Amino acid sequence: MLKLYHNPISANSRRVWIALLEKEIPFEEIVVKLDGDQFAPEFLEINPFHHIPVLVDDDFILVESLAILDYLETKYSQNPLLPIDAKALATVRMVEMVTVNELSPILTRLSSEMMGFTKEPEKLEQAKQKAQTVVEFFEGLLDERPYFSSNCLTRADIVAGTMIPWLPSLGVPLDNYPKLNASSKLLMQRETWQKTQPSQEALEAFIPQMETLMKAQLTK
Image 1 (spheres, rainbow, N blue to C red):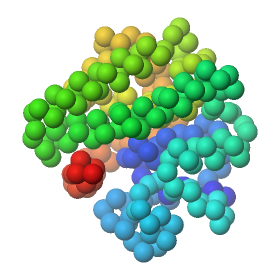
Image 2 (image 1 turned 90 degrees about the vertical axis):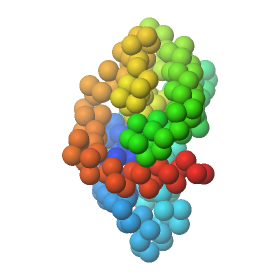
Image 3 (image 1 turned 90 degrees about the horizontal axis):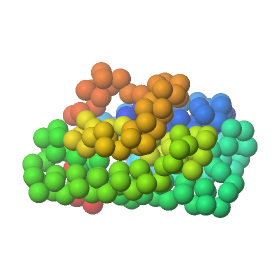
Image 4 (image 1 turned 180 degrees about the horizontal axis):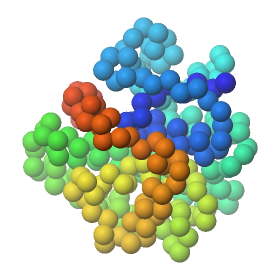
C-alpha cells in the first residue's frame, strides 16, 4: 500500500491528499509533525530535503507534490484528474505552475505579515498587488464551466483550490471576481475538501512552528 508522509496544515501535502481521495486510491497516512520530525534521521532517509509530502510505493520514494501527482495520474487510471485536450491540459499545467511559482510565495508573505512575524508594510502591499494579479489571471481563465477548462475537477482546481480560499482572510477579497469566488465555494463543498480542511485547533497549535517555517521561506 502507498504511504503518504504529510502534514494536514501544508497546502503542498493537502493537494496530494485530496488527489488520493478523489482518485479513490488506498493509502496509509503518516503525519509528520513539523516541530522537528522532518529532521529526524529516519525521515531524512526518505527525503534529505526535509520537506513534505513524500510518497512511498514499496521501494520507490517520490518527493515534490507535482511529481507525486504525475505518478498517481499515470499509475492509477480511475477518476482521471488531467484532461486529454491539448489546450485544456496546457491550462491545467499553467494554473499549477502559477500557483506554485507565484501564489505560494505571496501567501507566505501575506501570512507572515498578518500574523506579525514580519512587519514590512511596503512588502505587504507589494504582496497584495501580486496576489491581485494572480486572482485576475485565474478569473480570466474561468468560463461558464465550474472548473478550470472543464466541467469536471482537474489538478488545476486541486492545486490552486487549496490556496485560493485563504486569500480573503489574508486581505485579498474575492468579491470582485465572481467566477473564481463561485469556483472556490464549489470546491469547499466537496467531501474531499471538507475531510482535509485543517481544524481551527490544528491551525492554532501550528502557529508557533509556522513562524520558523515562514521566516525560512522568506529568506530563500
